[in-house]
Length: 196
Image 1 (tube, helix red, strand yellow):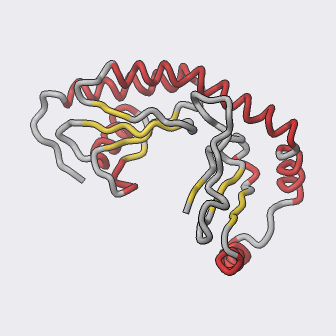
Image 2 (cartoon, helix red, strand yellow):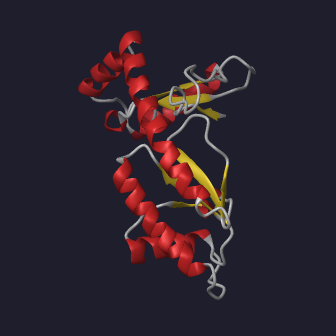
């Protein structure tokens, strides 16, 4: 299973990442217009895979949503025209390449408690932390005390991690990260918090 929703949103390369499609007979590839294309409101995506598998997934799609709107379908077709596709993806790459260095500098500014692997193609960084608090408790405190949303690692079954997006307005993202930094500073020397 390969989710290629960020394919085309490469941070450090001008070349689109290769697809997993065709590398293995049982591979299933999903993608859509929500992330790299920035067209989440259209609710258009696709799946490639073995014919029987795709037919089974198609039945689930029919059961839950049946058909996209005519307007969404027409806008999706326009976005996927080769020239326009490259314009849209170029805009996306420009935004994330411009925003990522500031987010990376923020992470490095807390390198005594934060680690990450630079993402190849996406507008989200997965950040590992070393603090005496579980990721859901950290999420709850950030949400309630700082009015900041991150995604806790526990939602992905990985513990002391959180996800930070940087495909948004950079100034607002940095304001949010400063509030995360405030909480990190307060937790560095605090007694052990509940782990969830």
